[in-house]
Length: 431
Image (tube, rainbow, N blue to C red; front, side, top):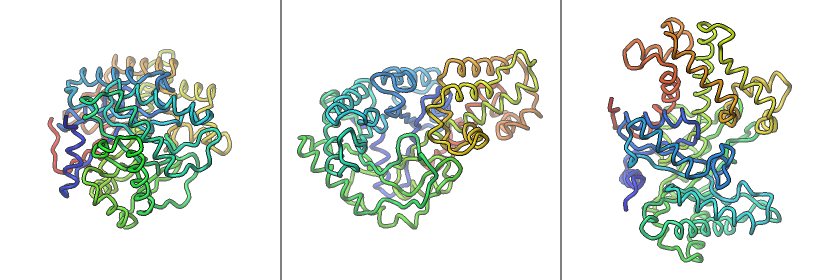
């Protein structure tokens, strides 16, 4: 059975700058923005869950793979997007969550993780076994990483069965940042060397043979390498194509494989376009989308302050700050400096550790109250212009309703529009 991802690869190999955006977020409003963007563009939506977000125990979102699938499918159905245009992916699947366990114990849980994703109809699977477990040498050697990835692919194939397995496309490669972005201030960043990329391919091909899954190689659609793009709390390292000239040639002899780029968040539209032209056909984005969502929701909260009596306001920003201070585990080890620097980072850092807090019940309640409060009033256009100027312009042109949920979703889509233009340069939106 043909995967829609195969068409992306086919076009790339034919010399056409075709790509696809990989949306790595579990926030319903971000997923809704991606679905609406796909509906209007006429393309597919690829939504990926990361191993620390969603696992067989619930991850930090409380969702198992089947729960995440149901969430995405529900949003697609509500938006009128046919399910055949929805692709579900699993990102960084491997022993990441269980590095404190022995390799045998961690890999047993990774087996169950991959099986749960495949059983829930995820058809794009990125295997990441680069994480050392208790007692492992550090760093892991290429052959160990490849052997563990091949083992997980065999689990996926056995879980799917022969017919369903034909729909699955795999992604290999480990030269990526830790899930969630860089942990500290970035120094010099260099692309993966061509030699390292070739070694990754060679070691995985050998591991596939040892696992008896040689025939699966043709369904490995992408190799993850570092094109030297990244972000930390305050800066973005932009793509420089002159640094990747030799690396881009490595996949010339792999007819079914393109590159996948991680941490493309905050790249300029021009840089995204260059990445797709240079064979990074899968562009992953996550924190950049929740960063945009925070911008929209806090802008709406500022509008709410002008329109709603103090006693009835959501005070969303205050609630988020209080909950982040009460449960600091997912930000305090990442944001250095004094109290004032940390406060700014909690709200505005590119790494957007705030995204881990949106499922908090108090924050969800405040978000719902914000949207309800603003749904009950007419937002004056001058006030909208002051806080969400691009959405104001679309409202003025009759392209967008001045409803709070629609405004927030459209602001996230401003990020996705750049990705769409880079990935599908010859396509026009279907309005």
